[in-house]
Image 1 (cartoon, rainbow, N blue to C red):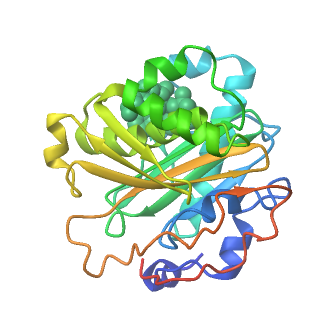
Image 2 (image 1 turned 30 degrees about the horizontal axis):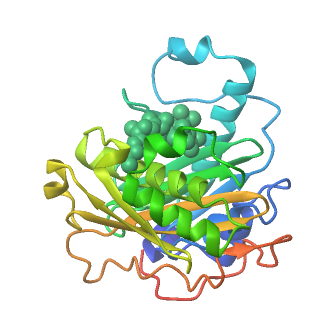
Length: 285
Ligand SMILES: CC(C)(COP(=O)(O)OP(=O)(O)OC[C@H]1O[C@@H](n2cnc3c(N)ncnc32)[C@H](O)[C@@H]1OP(=O)(O)O)[C@@H](O)C(=O)NCCC(=O)NCCS
């Protein structure tokens, strides 16, 4: 891949097509659907047969060497998704390390996020001038285990969720809610280096596929967007996807643009949008 690609900024339609491996046709488009065009995603729906992965210079960390094969495979496949996404920016051989709190360490000048659940692994990457931070999360579209909702939501949030469940019972709202808070945390932590408890985010999830969290933590002062973090969500292929993009302080010319007009947040059946289909909206990476 030439540096002209990186200079021009926007990955071409052909590069976007290649981000999706043979078993991930359509899969990449889940997060593509809810992220702005400045963010490149890659996904896989099955693990690579060879679970080898490099986290950068130095020996493999002990925890990874001791990990069970399924965790190694999940880790390696997700890292390869990250490498595929980075390759769209001309970084074909970049490695994504792992920080002491588990956060991915991106090459200088880039931000991103990783997620995995049973049958799905994904990465989302953007230039740091386009986004200050990214958080993505995927969960099975199923009921949140008993008790988890109570631990992760306040009384007022639980009432909001009860109303949503009554109005639209086909959606597992509590899991959407939980996932949105996880996505917020993944964008938050690399920016602040602070923990964030579930009760320190007052979340509102809208039926139109958006959500907004007000952060009750002093470190919100350092967030480029202040104490509010917004995101988008989608239910598709039995999965819940949530995504957050924190815009840089000065959004003028950042090119991050709005998330795509996502339409109904619940889509049944297979995707009709292929990952090589260019997104609409402004792009200036
Ligand atoms: C870190 C955490 C959010 C991961 O979420 P998860 O649903 O368990 O797992 P996912 O598969 O979606 O994501 C895992 C990936 O998140 C990323 N991640 C882990 N810690 C991270 C951190 N501190 N910051 C950003 N990303 C992180 C990693 O890339 C990880 O994958 P890897 O270990 O294979 O590299 C979760 O384990 C956690 O610690 N939650 C408590 C904090 C929280 O969510 N607070 C909510 C505040 S509102």
